[in-house]
Length: 308
Image 1 (cartoon, rainbow, N blue to C red):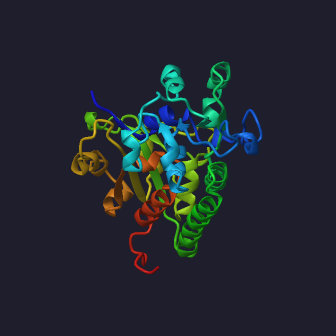
Image 2 (cartoon, helix red, strand yellow):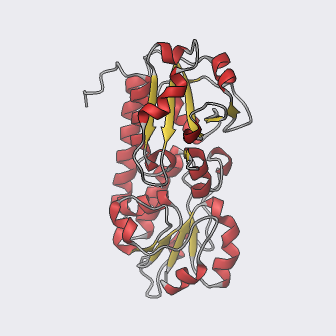
């Protein structure tokens, strides 16, 4: 049975919730000390996170990346790079064979530090679990790779794009939105719908996009709801995020059908059920502005999005 579940993929990529992973930048040595044998910037970098891979390419250091995870699909040239496993199945033999002078990883990979140290592989933990972390990651990786100006420019450009969107939505009405992060689409039912809670990275993006999370504040970050529970919340807008690990196209008619079958669902009655798809939805990296903009357009479809 195929599952199109954004949440499950996010767990594999990042090791769990975004909000719970707020950690300081960690490394075995100060950033200035991370260099190759000649004392220069690292020339052979392994990335253990899609977001970090995207950040390295965004600051102009893509030519230094020699190994990535199977989930690193952007930019397209990253797909052809050697694979070194991921969070749950790191391939240390492959890493050693690539002779890296730096391995970059997320704080959620902290259980791998001891083995990297045993193998003598320099590593740097770079957090990307909030917007501020993402901005900082671009500057940090740019500085480390001798692309300081490019890193600053990438961070400033991303920040400006986010700030422009915040200005556009700040005076708009805030509809109650249910953001679905995953369910078994093959079942054709809403028996177990995982929704985004408020204390999550995606929950924060929904807030910035001008939506009011229809799910009450809770310590549970991605609660599972039944169709009956969804009706009790009765959101004005439903946004379903999907991605198909099998690479097949998203069947929007199939996705929308069970939502429209819920009797009395306000979002269905108002034709306010939206489907967003793509790997960028789960990756906290340079493409986060794209995710934020797509959420905002779904929350406020009648806003003027044509103006710069």
